[in-house]
Length: 88
Image 1 (tube, one colour):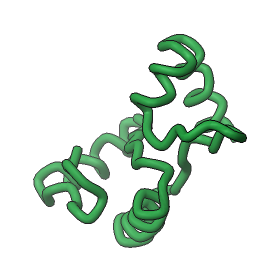
Image 2 (cartoon, one colour):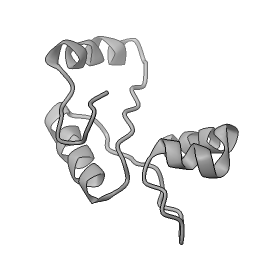
Image 3 (cartoon, one colour):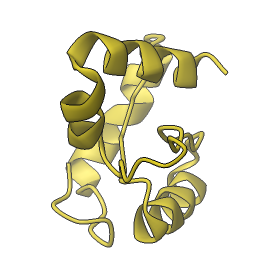
Image 4 (spheres, helix red, strand yellow):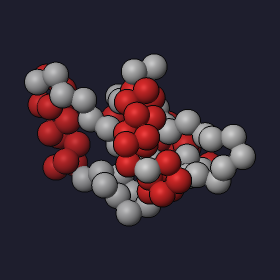
């Protein structure tokens, strides 16, 4: 994964996505849920023809990335949140 939102994945990685999608595999790429993360997730989804989804903001909690979710909710609850996000 890129080290920051403005960095796109290398073409060598993106080219494997089509192959993986043909095999029925789902690719999950978790950007931060701050302004920059939402902006670049939407941009890269458009460029790379992906569906854009992100972790739901939690009312009153400053959680912006998956590490924040794990720290606050624990690994299993974060996993449930991600699965629910993917299924909506």
